[in-house]
Image 1 (cartoon, rainbow, N blue to C red):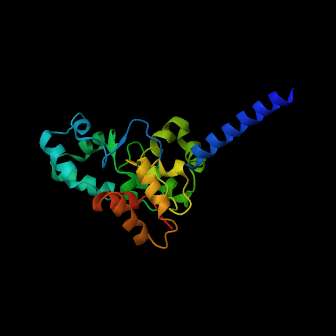
Image 2 (cartoon, one colour):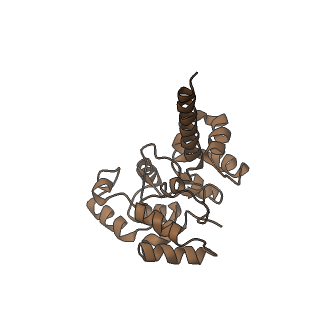
Image 3 (tube, rainbow, N blue to C red):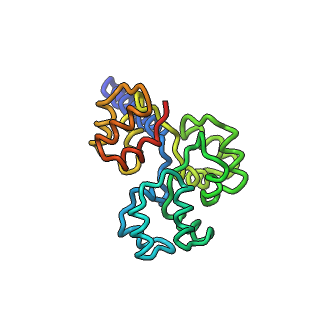
Length: 214
């Protein structure tokens, strides 16, 4: 093999490695069709199960929801049954923290069931989705594992998260990523939230802050 060919092979392998690392480190589960309830456009919410114009308007006004439990409480107050709310969660959800989610939160993930309240907790602390794929995949297979992952996030460190990690934040823009990086190092969660609020606004800053941990 010529030196040029070896160089091409080496470059290709390096690219594959970079892509692999990016995939492994993504800290918000990749959507398989489910959107973030806090950032989905109003017109798209209107097309989702059991959404009326009044409910959509109220939901948008109430955002951001700090947890899926808050969204559940809201939907039930709007007259949806738990079963109807679960149908809505097949399209929109508020991500749960894999490392701290309660059994009550996990049970609101479509397809999770009682078993995952045990399995999600057993393998804590979760560090990457490669770990999640391996451990949860043993029980339900890769397709179901990917569907479960999209409802979750693994908290990232604001001082070390890569651009690829930060870009997985729901609603994140290039400006958001740049603002987070420019404020490093953060000494506390409150300092991070202040920087996020300054870069966005009070409501969006608080929404984004929940995806981080020190």
